[in-house]
Image 1: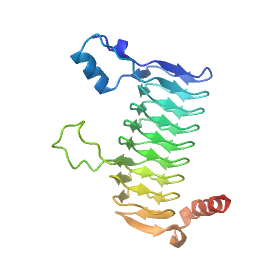
Image 2: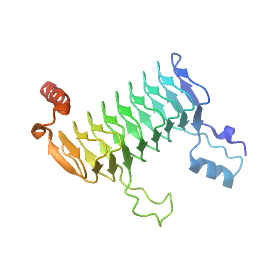
Image 3: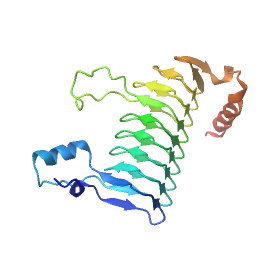
Length: 223
């Protein structure tokens, strides 16, 4: 079987740049398996669309159905699974592994491991890992569709932090580097350790005061 015949169509903005050894429009596993069972069917995959003024660095992999807005940067060795959506102005950092059906908002920064179906809001920064609970490994890989994390707008997940399961964080919350989150976090909270939540208004650490003031200014501008 010629796998190249299964690649999805790709549209790239005229002002965008694509680096060396990129793979665009790679078919999802289910479509490959369909072709293995019924050779010659060659169903067309969902198209890949890359907006204007984007930069795709080297060894970037985009599966079928990926949509990338204008002014995005995907650094070296980024992987986006099928049917992912990336909002305008977002940067995906070196080596990020983004699974399938992930939605990332505008002007976000994303690194690390992002599990299937996750939603990341506008202007959020995610440097840690967003993972499923993975409580049913005895079932078939494709039968289980666990709830993914939801990261709301203007939230930060620091390096080495881990958000587990179908929890919701934010908006305007800060998960410190190395923290572990397994339950919902209200808006404007700081999370440290394992699920230790502190309202931003009660946080006394100096290093986050600038960010907290920024959140307050944003809240004042909301209609």
